[in-house]
Length: 381
Image (cartoon, rainbow, N blue to C red):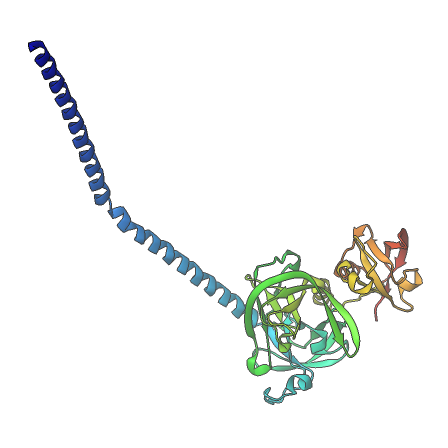
């Protein structure tokens, strides 16, 4: 019996020791937890600092936005020095708040592209080649302008005024235009009282083709830059610029049945022409004598025709080199001098770089068979 009590006492002592150890461990764990809690609480200063970090970042973001806005305002201010008003009738100070002012005076916009007075605009603003128009500089000074070159298919014209030391725009590379990039349209939306109005937007699309129906005549404009920057009729001929202030397009037409859809002609289309006038004072345009559509237009013309590459010839001018050397309507022009042609603007730019009398090698598709033709280019009158 005594032995039983001894064993029982040992068990109680062991149980007590285990309980004590467990209690000590619990106390240590609680103490450690409390210590960690206090450290977290004490180091709460890092939480206090966090808003400062966020505030610094916010401050930097605001500063970056302000700098960006400052940069673009300076860019636009510089470009505006080269923006002119163009009208078909002399501006005698008549208010533009008349219903037919724009149609009567033909108010539009142009951009100076050289210090000696060459101005780029739309043909429907300035009039056709050899016609006259009136140009108003930012200073308010008026000049008589001569249309030295124009193309109705492109709706582009070059005007010359007798002036020197003019500020002029910087031409960009429209082939680098990307959907989503910021752009700014500048022009005279409803007349001289609202001259050099700036609207902003993004490039909505590139290589757009639109159908034009004027005076019972149907035509297409191709390879256009689409933007949601507001472009009103008086903006025609003005520049579409990027954030660097480089001209990437010439504001031209607007779809009046939809809001927020404007178009600009890629500046690369006119570069060769401008460079020739600036350096030589003339542009002797080599002449092939066809009009063709990009493959994107083909479904509107020939529902059963599906082409993988090339441009579709819809018109061959009479007595032109194209007619003389055997190019036909409905031919698909594939290459010129080994250069693949997929857009009419590509063909134009290549021919613009040639001279009268130059021979070009043309590969075309006719009735599903490839044909090679040599054409001696003429001179466009």
